[in-house]
Length: 448
Image (cartoon, rainbow, N blue to C red; front, side, top):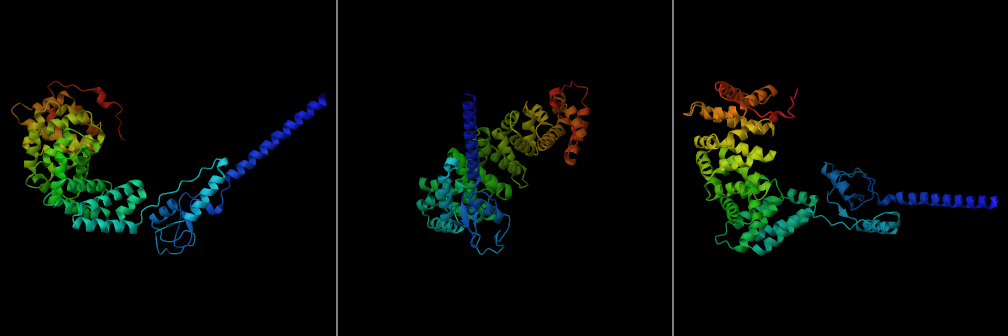
């Protein structure tokens, strides 16, 4: 009886050992990858094998990273590469896929067939076709090519880099200028212009040549037209393009300001936001317009003030994120360089409380702009007939204590000078009622 039981237990132990040995063999099979299927750089299973002119096969991601780092030799042979365009190795890829299928019972998944990225030669062919079509005013054919470029650009980051490095932005911007000069625009012409503008926003930042074409009078008028009466997508794309142009070439500001409806369209994007990116782009364009040094600056500021931009900016600042706050405060600072602009900010009952609230709360840049605006407002408040209404209001919301704290914590030289002058002006009116929200200093730490 006992011997029978012992034999049964021994048999069970033997079976367990067999199962364990089988599991170990399974693990060995699972971990063994044929060396010819491994990338020589990453030593991982290749997902998109490509072959260089040296005859060595690598995984596309690994070898492209190697080439983008500035290397012009084969990593294995160390020979100079005559061509930097890798060729897809379909045979190795199919062999890897077959091996994955054979070993799927071990948990290995079949690698998908990769899409072949666009080559420089293909990009050059497409751009040549677009140039010819734009000169011939062939709207339909040009639109098909632009749609194809958009699809390929969105397909992968590698395609996007290829299009950018081969001058796609310049060609598309030139085509945009050609179609914008059409004497009798129609729906088909508007459609191709919107398509080109949409493709250009995928290739930001643009080069000098592309910005020059987009900055032409006909191109600017076209984009302002889209801002005024276009759909949401074209308004967004136009705002992004205008930001790109104005930020790099201040000479275009006067040309933009002279186009009928430009200021109103930009103001509308801030007052009635369609998306954060469009709002920020509009604020950047407005900032450059109100801080430029050209003769029409005061006229531009007066135009924005009469539209009600000051009230919109102050309301935006109440609950804006950091980036939007910085841009809105920058615009307010520019507006306060004009007498009419200063009066408009002073007359807004929320302006001073919001400006003081932004001190030391958002970012260093927001603090600099807030101090600058307060200093400009206080300078006129000191000599105004109401006995310094701005100074009294600033004291009531705790500006004196915040500015003192700013001077203790530290700031830039220009900001320090303005804050010091503002504190001196406020000190003359300190006999008036003061109050401060202690929550303003919550979690504030000195940097030393």
